[in-house]
Image 1 (cartoon, rainbow, N blue to C red):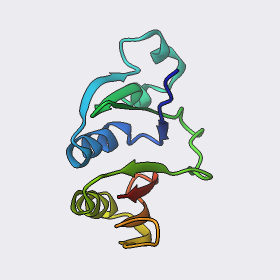
Image 2 (cartoon, rainbow, N blue to C red):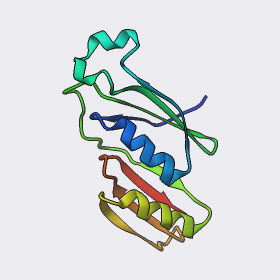
Image 3 (cartoon, rainbow, N blue to C red):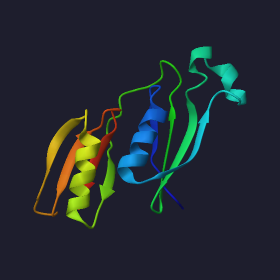
Image 4 (tube, rainbow, N blue to C red):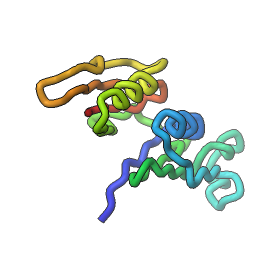
Length: 132
């Protein structure tokens, strides 16, 4: 069995994935808009360029996402995407990049369980925990 986070965005999936590709060192393997698929007829014309499905590989992990249908996006709650690092400096660098134009909930710092841990909600509304 494989378990992968699947994130839903309100029209910002492509921008979010381009951002994550840079700051997480991932590789986008798929970025499929509604346009050109049978799903295009089920969304308004202005939504057809929005993402129906995206897939990114980060190391040996997979992150997937799409733009929720218009009016169906809800604020993410009750979860965080956790990133684990062996190198505290790399963890802190990633935390700082993800936090740009977002909201830091707990600054990256040494804890009793970790050389460094922090929590944030990024500019796209996705909650993250960064741990080393």
